Image 1 (cartoon, helix red, strand yellow):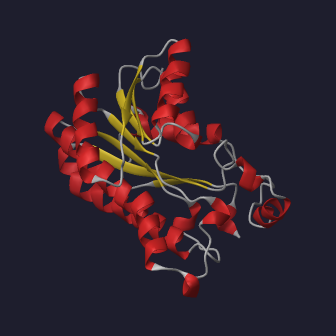
Image 2: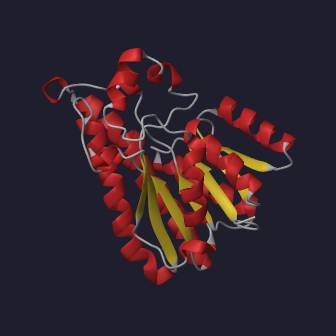
Length: 253
């Protein structure tokens, strides 16, 4: 029960890494609010959590839209009675659908990637940090990517967006320390889950991925949970501005 009694909000909760985080946090005793723009996915999530004995607050939200995020933060604070931890998981890329060479990239490709990853992270961080500062502190955990550190062809816009999230985290950590708010990040490598399984299951994708994975396989969402629980709990009370990389050795090669 490493986060027992903590009031935790998870963005991007309806699927993928965010969904796995919700189940792990519930098992460890957190009171949960789950944000996502996928309302049907949110309903399925809270129903499954309820079957396991955890009542979670579903909050539909477009994280790229500031008024939507601000309203959601108010709803979470009211519904949970406050906010101790914010886990900003929303974002990502859609495999080959997002891959585009730099010279072929359109401004709309660039802006969509920034909105999905960097703008949503900024909106989330600002809205929930303001609530935490008023209440006396908290912990914010962003999910970035190994591509915040390295790059691959066709994903310049994604690498730039995730690199921006990493620097956003570091800047927030310095600015918010006076409010007793810690800000850190988890940088996953290639993690296979239900939202990207069809992409990862393509033989050519698997072959290409394994070239950059010294551990010889892609990761699973539950392999990120240890890093999450450390950063969300009081165990990390002397940790801020740090990125924990969980990437199967991807950034070594």
